[in-house]
Length: 298
Image 1: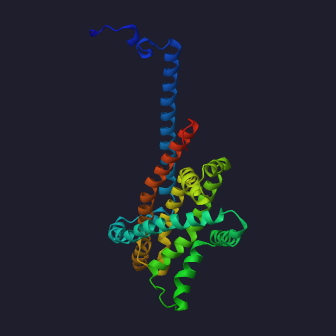
Image 2 (image 1 turned 180 degrees about the horizontal axis):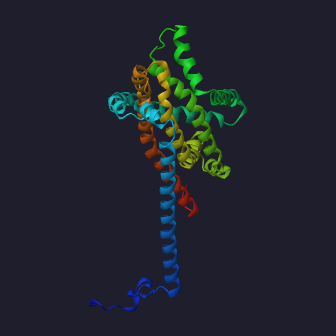
Image 3 (image 1 turned 45 degrees about the horizontal axis):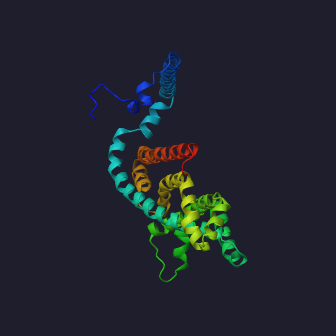
């Protein structure tokens, strides 16, 4: 039987059709919205006042004219920007290639550290020693040792390319950090998951691949993204090997006229690249926290 518009049977009447918010709830929502608007206005006003105070303090300082000429020259910014962008292409390629290698190598090290049984003790010992050593070794020293030490050995078949050697130093250092992130994720998987997988007939390797790793990787996505953000910034350190990246391009221009504006431009370029990745990391973290609080799959 057709039902005319405006007419509904009892079965077609839903809770949404009959629900009417109470006066108290309407008042509560109105109060909540008013508090939100008030907090936003106060935050905006305090930010504006703080910015104005800093602006007047800096611009009225005795050394500001000289500082502005040395670090914030529009002329040197325009001159250096194209060369810095050309050098930035090398930093981006290093980040992508090294990032992929770091994720794979770090995962293998983490798996080696979590292998069980006395037969795997030498492998666990080597993986632990690797992580402890490269996490404690400053990245700059690692870069200097690899970039200048490896060519001095004159090994047959080993490249002397400073870009590849600098990338290798980045991989050695960051793989140790990423390995610990992966290991932390693996250890958060409850032992009952392994027991259940083994009771279903899965081998140890199959349990790790199909049960443990999928859960572990999902849980450590935010810290992994943070490590990639740090890797993106630290690609600028390969400039100590003489590689013309964004930082070294700025150094070349700054050394000609002793004006440090190119360094500021290079720094702002790296910040412009880092901020989107940082916000994406925050979004992923918040999304995972919401899913976990709602009882969803982490």
